[in-house]
Length: 516
Image (cartoon, rainbow, N blue to C red; front, side):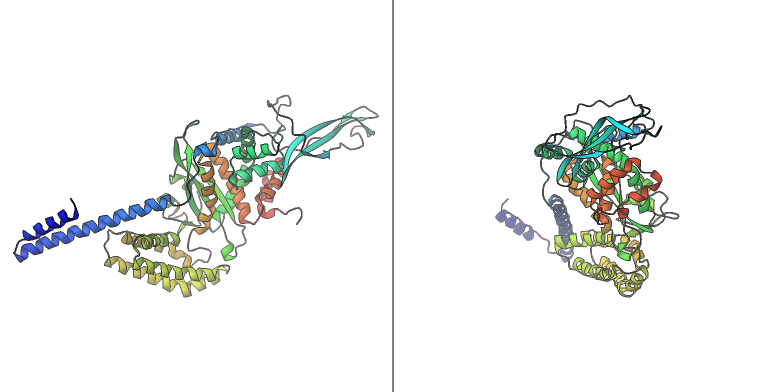
């Protein structure tokens, strides 16, 4: 029906209206209710359309065929990690047992760095002079920022001139037993994959252009074994996170391949827990701890933070509720999430009420800008004087606005969310160690968000756990203004012989660059 048809129908309807005032009033009420219902449906559809547009905003991921990624990478990493955990210690190992290799010779064009390991000049048995009767050369492919090198460990075989006893210096402990990667190369690979978001397939192709033939499966094996060795250090950082008076918690989704050789996926999660005392001049170094799970059940954060009794900054996700209660942690709600709902409303409708709410929240953040870097007591004094009156006024004002508007609108939904979360956010006003939001943790999950645009999804559960270990170490290093590649190289040089009860010595804040 065209516009003329609609107008004709309306005209005919008006001609048939009753003359009785009561009947007219009844019809008017029905029409007003119908119009109100239509207005609500229109607003609901606008909100849904806005949500779809927002979800699609930003650059699209490259197509899988363009990425040319072999998604068995994570599965290979997981298998290597399991194999590393199952290997016996060097002292218990059968010296006759050897892993099967089909290695290609290391390229001749690479620089060689020789390191001679001598057993000394005197026989340990009789004290006679040693003479050289041969040597063993062990090669290791390493990476010095900017180029590959082949490091050769030359071990002269010596014989005593008196008793004919043989002597030879032992090989230094290797990161991977009978493997050829040096610590610098492995650190470079880890940072490339988990910091610079370069899948191992791409790294393999980059190395090939430099004349170094390393198959992706070889790189996966090295990454898996190395992350397994680094797990105690990651767990130590996790203990430090949970030892603080307050921490930040958040999670982010990642696709998990359901079965090998298929594109079918399910939604898994990375959980991030961060301790950062820099805003209130705390003595503890900042650190981030990541965990991986196959779903978003609340049992995961409950297990991760079991026994924690400090304060947890978190959003309103119901899965975190198991953390809070008597004998458990306290909750500090996030005002950024409160503000975000009002921002969405302004973008949808231009609501003056939402705009005013944003302005009042901005006043709270103006106080926080001034409080940053002050002691806890100074922060409390400042907040009680300048922020508490604004916080109280905002809460009362929102309650008043809620009574004036329809309860079915998105604006009412935003106000109800704010009024529900604000009592749980109020704790920051009286504790200078707390923050107004959870932005600290949200920043910690950005690397994962960037990474998944490149690898699209995790290839296995083991690959997800290996990634959590790597993210823990790399992001903690970055938070301490430490070059993650240089620090990991240093750690991996020492890790094979390092005592587990001195794991703190390997943390980023205890590392000093050689040229410092």
